Image (cartoon, rainbow, N blue to C red; front, side, top):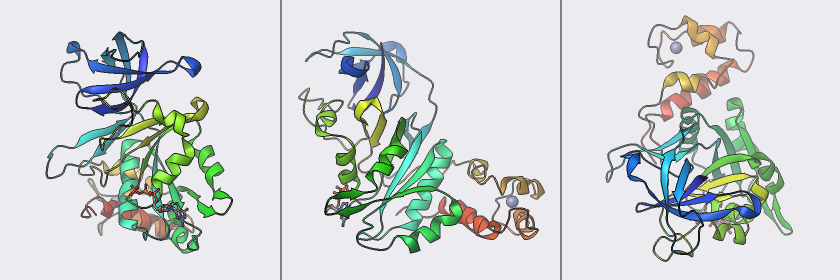
Length: 305
Ligand SMILES: Nc1nc2c(ncn2[C@@H]2O[C@H](COP(=O)(O)OP(=O)(O)OP(=O)(O)O)[C@@H](O)[C@H]2O)c(=O)[nH]1
Ligand SMILES: [Zn+2]
């Protein structure tokens, strides 16, 4: 029985199996034959045993499918190892308020790098446009050509929500953002209460709301994709990011790296990209694009915020 891992908590895995009306929550443990193989939220797994999902039942996870993407959480003081946070997500939704709290461009840049490194498409969601004009902020990000959705609270509801739904449709999206940006407000609007209750099982009681601070996958209405909410994720593991994976996302600049010395950091005097851009090969936007690329490359080594 195939399933998708929605929460991980102390050796218990909440999974969702089945489609449509057959969809149900199945609590599972790992089978011995998995050895030390890790299981994270978003993993596609194969379950055996009692997959009825009835109260008190426990299935076993016997296989984990190869991961298409992996988003890593950074090592920190309590855990020196970079760990996979979420598997198989398509896009990284970086939620930032335009005001209250002020946007943190360095953190956003780090999120973009993490997305590129994970093989995920980034999507910027800029909330609270009712408080300030989004134009100055957007200008700063224009050369990066990152998709974005602007939301604003209005008397009749929230502007931009339909556009956001369209961007999430059929995708597995990880939502990140620091406290107060309005991420919970968005998740509540996207995933109705009834759906939120399923797939989010408290391991201790077997029902109710999951309280741990780990990622939680929530199915969007009508099986139209997933959002994975990540409370408490403040930074990503960028220590092992491969430069070429970032440069790949700058298709207008990438050919210019042919003129770089071996092992070029693309942020040094000998870098071939300066000449490439100066020759006009990257078009009129070239200089701003190169600045943005270098900003991201530097964000890798910036201290965590
Ligand atoms: N003006 C305005 N306020 C908003 C908007 N969206 C959310 N808020 C408010 O911003 C505050 C923070 O929203 P939350 O959804 O709790 O933010 P969060 O990112 O989940 O933050 P944590 O719960 O701390 O993780 C709340 O008081 C919301 O009512 C918006 O579009 N405009
Ligand atoms: Zn270079």
